[in-house]
Amino acid sequence: MNSQALSSFIWSVADLLRGDYKQSEYGRVILPFTVLRRLDCVLEATKPAVLAEHAARTQAGLNPEPFLLRKTGVGFCNASPLDLPTLLGDQDHIRQNLHAYLQAFSPAARDIFERFDFASQIERLAKADLLYLVTEKFARIDLHPDVVDNATMGSVFEELIRKFAEISNETAGEHFTPREVIRLMVNLLFIEDSEVLAPGRAVVRTVYDPTAGTGGMLSVAAEHLLAHNPQARLTMFGQELNDESFAICKADMLIKGQDVGNIVCGNTLSDDGHAQRQFDYMLSNPPFGVEWKKVERQVRQEHELKGFDGRFGPGLPRVSDGSMLFLLHLVSKMRPAAEGGSRFGIVLNGSPLFTGGAGSGESEIRRHLLENDLVEAIVGLPTDMFYNTGIATYVWIVSNRKPEDRRGFVQLIDASGFWQKMRKSLGSKRREMSDEHIATVTRLFGDFAEAEQVTVLDAQGQSVGEPRLVTGTDTAPRPPEGGRLKRVPIARIFKNEEFGYTTITVERPLRDAAGAVVLGQKGKQKGRPQPDSALRDTENVPLADDISAYFAREVLPHAPDAWIDAEKSKIGYEIPFNRHFYVFEPPRSLHAIDEELKAVSVNIMAMLGTLAQG
Image (cartoon, rainbow, N blue to C red; front, side, top):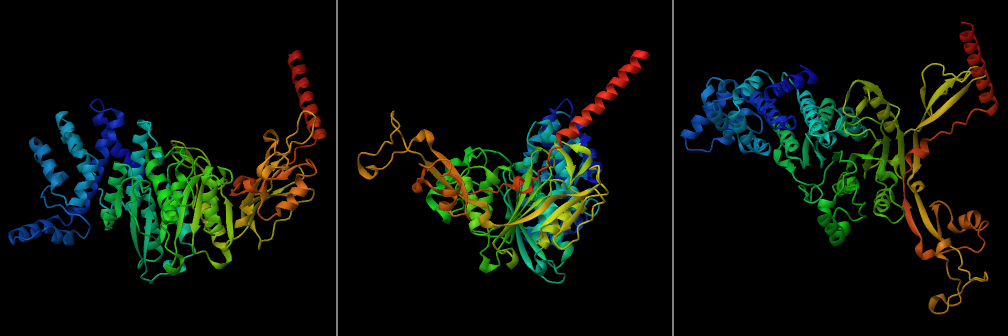
């Protein structure tokens, strides 16, 4: 059963709840029941052996739990003879029996249902005479991993959460990321690591997501690595703020046999659940444009007291958008290069690329990353890719173990045109990247190549055939006679310092009513021209340019009396992504437009003449 069909079936439970529950409350019942049935099915095969082991160990006066966990082969167990199908055999006592069944789970699994506050929902369903009917619905479906694999199950949970979030007018995209975006990020993270991906190498690596949601990024990373190298072991770590998403993520980790102690509930920015830890790989899709006012006191305190010994040393972004705080948080979790280094991918909106002038928190964060040669690549994604927003988004690949040929450089890839329309929109998500699109971006990144998309135009300006991706080693197609090639950059490579600039303050003298320059009367300013604040201006001088030469060339010809206030000069960094991919299309000539208008006018007059004759 595919994820759409399965989620539709589970969603049919909503028909039972209608009237007794508000639509926005359906998730409180459906999500924990789905998790319960999943765990139920996982334990089904080992149930007889577990019950026998429980009886034997209890009789011997031993704590049975460690022995039961060994029998199940996963990180949880249940010592009750009950499961959802057997609960249906005693309709009159289903409430008490369901509570008893939940209490018989091992602590890690029991915590999942406490996060859902499932006990209160059982009571509410029982009072509405719905508990048996809902339990019966879920007892009928088989959610064993052999029938519904982990990837499909993850998609089901995400689809359900999306629907509930839409009904509740919540932000669904805060909880998860489209799978094709995760696949692209994972591809980019692992492509340079041949040692890890080589089959037969029993490597052990760690992966971390500070905004784990339902665990989709962690799951896809593990699937990708194991598909290439089944001997590899990837230990997963994460933190999640939302209780329901955390519960689903924890359930997924339990079933995979991961240590659920590595998944922490809480606010990553104010209470780091993995303090002092560092990781090999990291992935994150922090919420876009969400203010961090609630944690402002703790974040500012860490910034001011710990500086670069804490997570937020380089600077703080404006309170209206906390996504760059997650960027800094991940940088702080990077393993030192001498110990193997780290690489991470993070999804951000356009704001972190350019918001804030020289000296601002955002600019200082960019400066820290670029001057320390940490930014490996930035990939611009298509719009309308996420469930809760249609804005432009970007994947940053950050690494302190760049290959030799990448050192000192940043690769920008514009994949905004790499999309196909979805058959059915999901919220704001109307587009998706195909496997071919993901492969193309991965290849451009892996080859560290500049590339253009070349379209052949005939003499009339019409395209001939499909556009072709041309790298520096490829031969460009030949245009037909009278035609031309339209070239659009797709991948470009820049030196780190090309994104830097010095903001200089240009002063002009204050003049009195007679036009004479006003001079200072005392102190350092005595005898020197006083600046006129009304004429003050700033200029951004590229780091590669000599400031004096720039000033003489660009300013003095227009303002011979100007000077630079050197004390106010500041270094800033911005990444004007779109500017580097903009291609100027010259407008058509006035003659061509005039001829077209004349032709249209003739057609209109001919149609009017036909109407008049009719």
